[in-house]
Image (cartoon, rainbow, N blue to C red; front, side):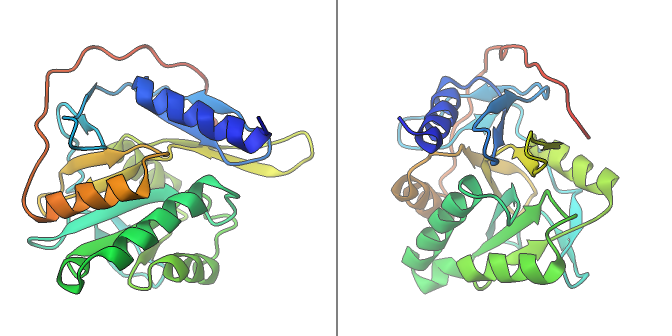
Length: 237
């Protein structure tokens, strides 16, 4: 098994096991580190491919700036849904794979449904992701997508925490900056509630099927969740 396949397999197995949040390394080291963030999650009914947390996360108070300075509230517009992803443009595999799935899903939706889905990518690497580079990256995948960037570390980390996401930067042995980050894709409704989360590795067809059902008004049922296993590792913020 090559290094990239091993990394993807590690993330998939951990996601399926439901062992809390993962920080997925997008650098050459191919390692994953478990987040110290403690979360409570419940398994989804078989017909949904994502998972829900209990209690559900409320991100209605989160507002971040688009690259043009426009404030973007994380609650979707009335009757709409918002797909939110924390990533960065230098990511060699995980981020482009996820955004490619989002692109295919959006293209396969009927136009009337496509107009009801807002797509946001929030960079976790504003040091290297310039506004121009991030805008080009996001709109190459989803022309209507919103590129979100802030150099306010408190705001960025606080927003990630609200979603139950995490990330950290490190320098590898070759002196290259690497970013490890939670690779989940979040669905937010018009109340600002995270109603579904897809872990990295969820098939594009499953994302599309879930999204169609959510747009039709269906919602996953939550179940009481067992205590998650304790996380570990130090965060380099």
